[in-house]
Length: 491
Image (cartoon, rainbow, N blue to C red; front, side, top):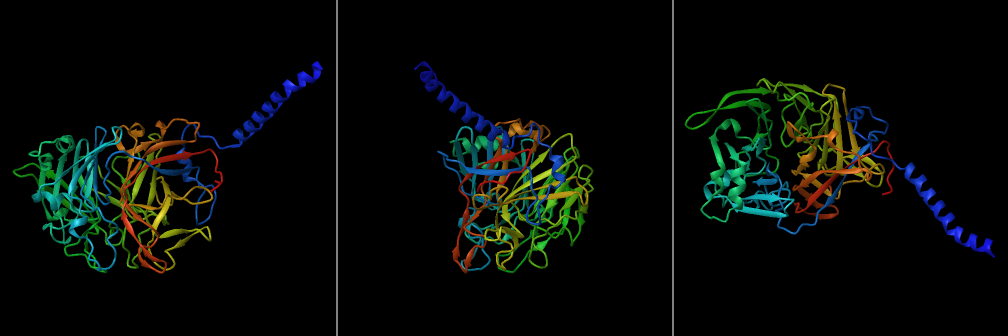
């Protein structure tokens, strides 16, 4: 009797011990997070075919539920100050389309308000620009960069008469004090106008560019690529491409002027606009990398990366990589990652518009969307480079190794890194040595805001019906998942 009772009490314990033992085996078999992210290892592809190398890292995006107003915008100017995000210009509508019915770039799609957002406080503020400043500060695809608490912006496609469709590229260069801008937008004083935060206002044909990128280094500004489009938009018509990296400084006077101008012209490799220009190798502050851009003579995207050096000396040079980028060549949200001890630059691209797309039925990457070039992308991808020719690898995030993005998103959006992970001397770049070990196998590294959403890879009138686009109203948390080994996901 006592033996039977002992067995009765021991049996649950035995079952529990077997249960936890089985779970422990499963836990050990699962991939575990590395103690430190070895980005240098990304230069060594571990397999895969033309569709994807098997990367030990991938991203997941999760939309946030917010209890405060958030604008739906794309192609805007972005700045950050003391926990505040500042958004200037851009569009409130979707993709402009490739026909003139209805006429694109209408006055109602222009964002004529300055938005300030504090995500930790869950608050937003906005203030309309004054009529005399509306054309400049509501332009779309302006070039911009930030130096400390000063935001610089120039160019962009706009209309000087706010009642008309866009019909001109701005020739104005602005310096904006972000601390003042935040204070003005938050203020309820109607007499405080947003232009009071403008500390320099320069007019010059040298900055009359839309779809370009603005860089700053050691007193020099660089305007990379872009075009001058000076008429109402018409399908098939292009503006005058700069084909150049334009260099200039600011000279004090009454008023301030753009000075010391020069241009590195290359109509083969720099005939680009709407590309991604990102920081280069971490310990070389005088470098940048140009990825993608449009349009080639075949109306496709450029696929060879361009390494830009000499930025700290005012004398840029370029070198073209041999890599042929497969996806995400259009301006999109990008995350830059680096290790201050390793000469490797890592750039992750979130969607946008792409040379290739993922075909679900075949599980492969295919060129275009059934013959239609440059589809919208639902892919995240990463390029690691040592900065030299034949020293880059592209990792493309597709099933079964990693999930697709939650839709065809990311075009003309922005990635905002978590400040605790950024490099001390470059708030645009994530320092991977600051991302600590986590038992969940992932770390939230930033947010993705804005951009264009398309309900399919090809928008407009298609064989499957009309596919709409619109400015994305969602804010996404961006998670980096990094494992010691690659595992197929159950998707």
